[in-house]
Length: 352
Image: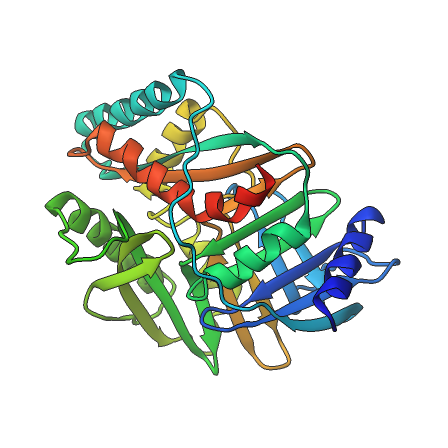
């Protein structure tokens, strides 16, 4: 299928308000596209298709079944971004508002006997001249080959797109894999110098995931910590693996892990209470999870929805955040979010 025909098919689906999803696995050049039929129905049996779940565990999860969809495959040539793309803050209060949120999270942690980490975030709205799939898709799918890349559309949710580096859970042949991903540095040439704050932030995530998996009867194995490149930034990563056993399902693991301390905080309940009271917007599907459930192959691959954006006709919203501990510096945290903005900023640059 030619690229022009492929993009045209997606645009027709959108115009007719019929769902579709396009995705590409990490380190793969081939994209898989599933276009729902006109008489599509939301599937209650989540056994063979694409799952799209929000940050709020009580929120509505969407599932596009592959059983009644048309499949297409296409390759996007790899693309190298030559430089960073600068997004000027829309107003002078944007930085101060985020810094104030970071400081409040720090004080809350310092005054608490149990809170170790709170992940705060922000949404940046960017005006665009015209929404155009053929401009952004080659950059999204060609520019970040190491990430899980996706473009999702449903008339209830609108367009979402992203290039996430983080696996929630991967299950194949009764073996599960997940990861603890935290800490952020700009991806520049030279050796990465991690601070004690960043190493401890990543260790909190690792300890919590191990504890949660053990709570449902699993016996996780843990790798050494190493660096993971993710677009314009680098993170600290630990791999966690094991066997799921006969009675544990992908949903059991997803339920116990989500939201992870990498996107919420630790302890989860207290961090969620802070976010509900202090974050000034609805995250929707940012820091939710998404991915493929293939009951035929007995495989599940779910990813945390990071480095993502919501696309509308005249505005794009990019979502970024960072983990706050008692030792966080508000200016450093602001700069971290600015670095994370680059991943999607490069993709939408032709629309500005």
